Image (cartoon, rainbow, N blue to C red; front, side, top):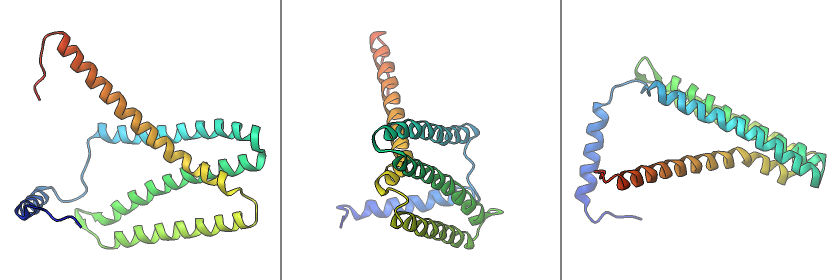
Length: 183
């Protein structure tokens, strides 16, 4: 267990957090229109990239393992993307239920937990039946399911690399022009 060497800093941080939370406006925070459009665009690009990657991987799997493996992989990819979409809708529904008219509503949390538990229970039972009957190849299903998460991680790494390269280029340009950047 981590213990702070300066307990006073913990108290200062807690007091500052409470102070800042009281200064925030009540109700649902509204991100800027540019940020909303950017984040919606990101997840839509993730879905498109996942579809393309899944189709290409499905063709590669077909060449080596056959139709049953391709069907299992594509079912897993569809399941992964579908669950991501359901997660989006569940969170959106939960946010609307928790915060109505600027007041916190306690039943919203129950809605989120209930929908999530029911959703995953139905999917787990369905997948268990498919796998135990031998209709689906488990490893191909899991590989397909993980495709969307791999795409998300690779897209985030790509954005971080592009950002660091652009900052490096800006620094190199400033250094070559004789200017200095103050931080």
